Length: 317
Ligand code: AMP
Ligand code: MN
Ligand code: MN
Image 1: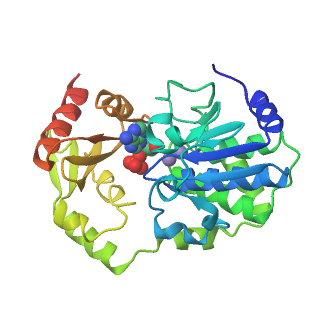
Image 2: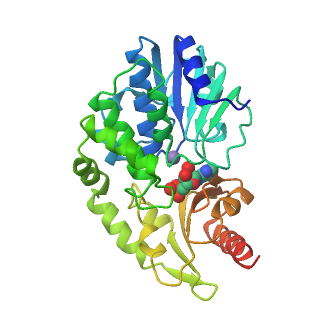
């Protein structure tokens, strides 16, 4: 059932024992919104645990309280009973084992237009919000909390990373108002920007190798980058790789295909014109009109054919 933000606040106030989670392959918005909401709820004297069922990219290590994030893969608990499971920045199909482990009604808070609210008790979806962190910022105004510098740091990180540091089309006046309030609460934008831009030497080497793989399709309207198995061993994170080809003149859709495991590939897409969320959805993924992704369970070369064909169809049709 779709609900309003006011009702989200009421549900959170009414619950005492809350589990917070977000999507696997976590980004700044998933991690930032989870940590911010957890700290908000703790300040309201709730019992809260936060689970993200994946490796956390090293760039997020400076986020306040990042160490409280647990992985359900590392617990012996057979089940966790709670009053509420809050799923952030995704629908429930990308939260890993948490979905099975936690027995609680599900409250889903998201900004992905592709979220259909399947298998959740309540969905608050605001596709106009640039980031789930923007929603949590609005939500905090409806709760008896003060935004500490730590909470603000987490929220700003999600806002900044989901908007390409306030460059993408999802950056709205409200996004910048939220960012301004977070800076007033003590956030240092330059510190967060520097930390997000930081790259390990092996990620840098992986980036150089990845850029050499660039290929153009459909008269240069599509650019692809390929993190094959050998390159995948070099890189911890491919964050930002795609941005270097999406800017090439004439490119309408950029994609990055990453080999994650045998017969398991990840696709990231960015677009200037075409609705890439529809392409992602047609392959079982999702996202936004200009930034979307999916996974393809096939060998690398086959996944490459599948994604090029799917983008071609969208371009021509
Ligand atoms: P990324 O390319 O990983 O930065 O993802 C771009 C956008 O698409 C983000 O908003 C993601 O949350 C979304 N997205 C990426 N992969 C998937 C997926 N497999 N299923 C649903 N949404 C996805
Ligand atoms: Mn995300
Ligand atoms: Mn997001």
